[in-house]
Length: 253
Length: 347
Ligand code: SF4
Ligand code: SF4
Ligand code: SF4
Image (spheres, each protein chain N blue to C red):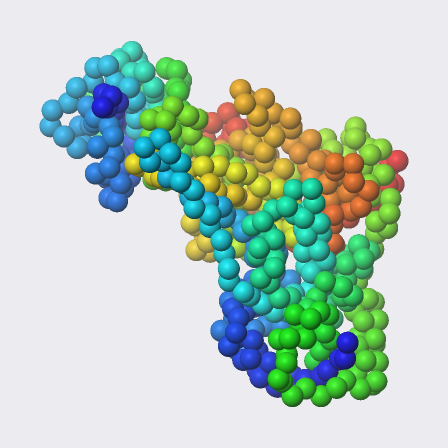
């Protein structure tokens, strides 16, 4: 049998939820370790080797000078680098602090900020070349599996970036914007979640980040029309993907 | 064929007979946001509904459908077709939706016969219900698709106050009511239907002349309206399009789909899946190496409207039945009839 591809799972600035999503694949986990050699994954094993990786899944964004060095190092050791989840793609929730002056945000959290050395939060793509993105906070297991299987078969994964509305309609839901006048982010947010929130009657918060070619300004105007003020709107676009080029203006850059 | 009547309170007798032999699907909620789903007893059935979010096309072209499963064993392929043999009744479909199914029939029975579609179609029985309460977005009358129905049904019901008029449209329809003791409809009952039809027609406020729609599309490929709709401004009080795809996903005559394979972790077993797609989505026009025939939003919304106007693929007939779903569902308040009228005015 051909050598199993070597995988590394790394954590930078994030909450570990994306890694947990791999653990949560209980039905597939044993099959996965038959197919891949998990070479580096600190959360899961004691002995780790980060050399010559075929695939690296990077959870978390970059928020310190050390992380900049680390991601460059991982890039050098890896054939196929995956931004695993929204933090790695664009900073996600930790990047909300980019909107507050650095010192001020450090003082909110740490009693003695003089020991803290952090940068603005960015996705890893700001510093190294990224080969694939797995959207979501956290990504859906189906998309994780799709990517890994495609890597083995050496084919392009089918990771569509159509809006949540598509999956919302597949579920047969009434639209929360048109039927309930609620500010749902679905029309600009990438699907992949199966529209769980709208299906439960809750608006999409935006946790899968921008869809392909979103019309963010049109949605911001719709929100204004149903009664949101400018500050509310900014907060909505900042929440998960304020640093993304697609949401720049609406997030208040 | 003869027409019958049944007292509204006796509808249960009719339904119970159907339930014995078939799966029955019908509107399960009142109002505009109803849904056609399984009916188990008369209490589930809400014939007073106005429209459904998702059109009944889902019974013939499901949002996600496994076409076949495959296995690779010692270099050989084994294929197992997935055939759905369930016989079912669609109870209470409105005329626009029945007309939409007739349009889908044409598409899926043309040069290439789609056996998955045709199989489901063959197994279906349509009990239509004339629409006496068309909504504010309905323009079925203009599109020759409502509010009353003249073809495409196996059985047709019309609400005539305390009774339903029952008309038979096919042998299938005749067969399923065999054995029921129904009274023959009187002349007066048929007159009542006429009256109801006139009243319903009067309720429709959205009017459009469909004959100029395909031409309108042909002549306005470069109109600035498409930029307004795609990027800035909007048209006739709307916001610009979001490319959310909702309009085409709920449309009873939009039939475009994507096909892909999935495999399990053995990498040896898999299935071929057909999934509903929409030309409003960026990925729809994407080809190998990243090329895309409709990169700009304005090109996508234009394409969708042209298809509905009837200009796509050289056609001369509108594929829209005027059900109004796309208008209700659009978060940007884009109204296809208003866009058509704006194009007409700005010629
Ligand atoms: S509820 Fe949200 S996700 Fe669903 S169709 Fe409406 S805007 Fe889109
Ligand atoms: S285009 Fe709109 S009104 Fe026409 S059939 Fe489709 S959903 Fe109904
Ligand atoms: S529903 Fe409205 S916003 Fe969404 S794609 Fe259709 S026209 Fe555009």
